[in-house]
Length: 361
Image 1: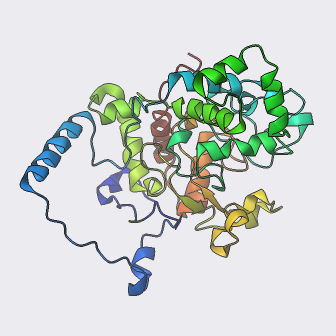
Image 2 (image 1 turned 30 degrees about the vertical axis):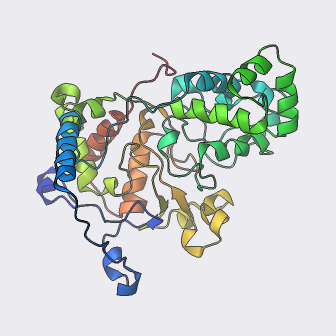
Image 3 (image 1 turned 90 degrees about the horizontal axis):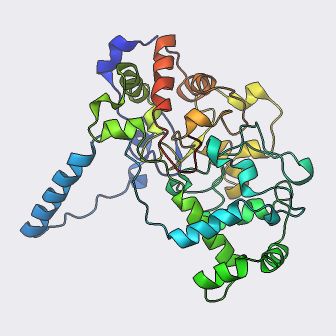
């Protein structure tokens, strides 16, 4: 059993973990055949003035954030178009995107409470039961793929999924556009932003722009990263060191603390064999690629809003954040830890949630 007295033995996360199916096992990259390893790029000779410019840039950035940390602050501004985002917000909350005018995007992604709906799985049109836990939409712009199985490359592509899914909105775009044309406001709003007015690509573009605006900067952890020492308690800082020490950071890093790789659930111990009753959704990325290596692989979820988005895991089986941490230790890390270590990690994760005008105050 590993405790706080072993923090000095911190283990660096495996290189290359952000591409494809990552394993916590740091030996994987060493076991690859030489032919599978990439050749190093040729050395480029930079002009002296360029080197100086980069040095100045590094010094400027180091004043605002600790670049050595595996987790980065969320940018304060992601450069969205306010008018398009405002139109997208209207569409996001509009129940007319669903077949029977009963649910909106916000029904499953409640912004004031964290961007999800707090259910194991969401309910769609006519109380249809969803197949997988609804993730938060906050900070989705930082994900390298969308959906648990990564079947959409962009936010723009992702929007078709819920609108047309038989167990979600069960709608068709021609029907949706017809409803929007009949509205008192939408025709003028679309025409002011798009030369061709109300179209499927334009509606998706506006919603995607709104989703891009849903970021949560200025979290306690980000403030600590940028030099505000008092932003975290000693217990929370200890949790961060343990988060790195135990290897959690191998999959949860970057600005979104996740969302940038796929990972098999059950790396060390077989979660699905123990749980039983395997569903199509449990197959994860395999449903998209047909590659056996992708069975039970999912996009690693962001931990940014984890303080607000219970239940956890793709099947909603972890009722609390502590339950989720326990599951990760058992099935992903294959190790135990003292209770105080796990509680410190939970305390750290809660510091990752930042601010948004959409969140309930």
